[in-house]
Length: 142
Length: 319
Image 1 (cartoon, chains in turn yellow, blue):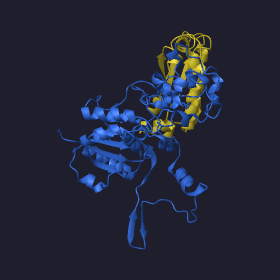
Image 2 (cartoon, rainbow over the protein chains, first blue to last red; image 1 turned 90 degrees about the horizontal axis):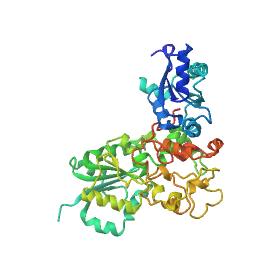
Image 3 (cartoon, chains in turn blue, cyan; image 1 turned 135 degrees about the horizontal axis):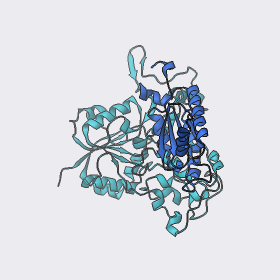
Image 4 (cartoon, rainbow over the protein chains, first blue to last red; image 1 turned 90 degrees about the vertical axis):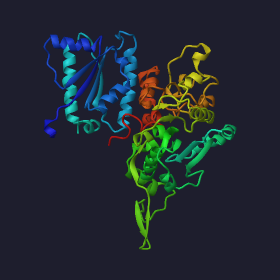
């Protein structure tokens, strides 16, 4: 595969109550965002085990985005509190293992923020294009 | 008397602590020994050469215990030979099962390791800059060889198929006794599983707040073992000493927490967990009271992957 043909492969874990609704709204309002993202709906950002993110990276994802409800808005009260702690610690682990920390991102996007969802996807896609292909996933592509 | 069970034991990249755990069986060993025939135990106990092992018929050994990780070509070779000769091959101890302490070497390249070991350490005197070579000729005629030092550490199951795993650094001798008896009696779980009671260290720890009917509190401050001393009988994790007992097999009987040392996970992951470090991240991070505490954890990779890096999803440093 030639470098200039490369398109990022981005996995988005979206919480059912906020970010997924935000994605839905982005669609209803006809906001455009890059086609490189693949959304996985999960019940809560607190459901995201670090294993999910690392498995995605191992199997060829170039970037992983986790979207949850704003602090205080979690449908399960404290799922997003757990999510951010796990996420920040995982980010330090990934940095220690030589991966660019920018490959993973966590943001709070509510159900009313369809525009923000589309923007966040465009920003993340741009970041991943700048960093380039995931060195771990490259083996999986070969 | 029934036919003796043929046993092979190989100390690979480990430190020999696992051998000691077998010797520590003491009375149990005395009881069990008449039932065993040790056909190979290198390099510590029996004087059997590699070529003797290679000459044995395939599947002629009942149980092979492999302790230590695979770093050298020699270790890889013996792992393959043992797999051929043994009916049941056990990854015995944290190194063979997960990569162990030497597995943290996967955070460094071979060149970095050689640089430290043969040049930079204070006690090294190496004016000619000699590093290990796989072959060299002495006096123009004697060819000497050394095994190749691979770029990274592997647990046994990345080299050959493994029937059973036994955690611990080293496995606690009472637990080794149970495992040996289970092997002798043929009471083994399905191949590919860990030999374990299946309980977490917390389950067998007397400091566990649940044991006293207390509610578990969140961690308010992150402490290292050098910071102060833990309160008698109180949960180490709750006090801020990052103890990994919640995600570690407790076949050790919570030995370390008993003496104020937080669990570091040598027992291996609980059944169903593939990546020990990531599950530990999940468990510890979720028990932190404040977000900022995450930044206070010192060298998290080496804390959470102390024994399990080579067996992890990302088993080595990317670049």
